Each structure stands twice: as C-alpha cells, then as structure tokens.
Amino acid sequence: MNLKELLGEALYKQVIEKAGDKKIAIVSDGNWIPKEKFNELNENTKELKKQLKDRDIQLAELGEKAKGHEELTAKINELTEENKKAAAEYQQKLDQQAFDFALKSALTSVKAKNPKAVEALLNKESIKLDGDKLLGLEDQLKALQKSDGYLFEAEQQHSKPTFSQGQHQTTPGGEPSTLLDALNHRFSTTNN
Image (cartoon, rainbow, N blue to C red):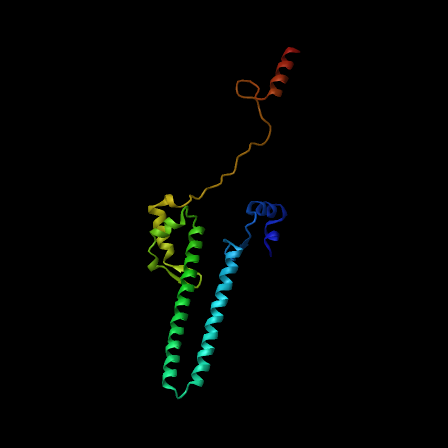
C-alpha cells in the first residue's frame, strides 16, 4: 500500500503540497524519515557488508597461497585480526544506530515536547535494546512524567458537545423564548 492509497486523494495532495521538493517515506512504526537519507544509509550498509565479505575471501585465498612462508602467514594473521576488529566496530555502530532510532521513536510516541531534553535526563546505560523493545525505558519515562510533566504533551480529553432536542417552550413567567413565539403571542393577544 502506497501513501496515496493510505491517505486518500485529497489528503495526499495536501501532504505533497506541504512537503514540496522533500520526498518522504513511511516506515513500519509510522515515523517519517526523508527517503534520500534512508536510501543513502541503506546503500552505505550494503557497500560496507560487501567490502567485509570481499576482505574475508581475499584473506582466505592469501592464507592458502602463503602456507610455508612464516612472514607472509604472520601478515595474513595480522590482517585477519584487523578485519575482525573492523567487523566488530561496524556491528557496534549498527547496534548504536538501532538503539538511537528506537529511543527517538519511543520518545516521539510518548509525546515528548523536546525529545533531546528528555533523552538527556535518561540513564541510557540502564536501557537495553532487545529486538525492537527498549528494556528499562518505561520505568524511567514514568518517573520523568511524574517529576517533570511539563516535558510531555498532556493528553487531551475530547468532550462531545451537548445538543438539546425537541420543542422549546416559553420561559417560566409566560415570556416567549423565541422571536416566533413572541410574535405569535403578540398577535394572538391583540386579536382578542
């Protein structure tokens, strides 16, 4: 389902007019990110994974060719260790990006007025990302909402307007309540 089908024709036109030249994409949790940024990060990730895979293949080939040459074997082992460190650092960066995105999404979903300010008040070391859930965040957010409620948008209760139904009567004391009633009363008393 594309955005046009999701919003309908009229609302889609309004969104496109408002967004202008900025292209937008929707992700599964409903948060909006620029499509160019998503594509850029996605391509970057694919390229880095390809480079790591190519290095592993090259090192394995060199290892086979270098058997019996201690100096070359030592260099290959050194490069293999560097490659493992680079892969670990890369995975750590990916994990950090996933954590940051999940945290920002969570802060948006709880309607934080200033997510950066709320994030600064959180003890991030006690929050852990488990799949797509942030463990330990809910308790901290509840405490912050209690102590610093001004950082969050208040939930608005929408009350329904009340409408009266039926015929309107004259007010107590015999006075008419509408213009029509007043005219009818006036002309009915003068004709008598």
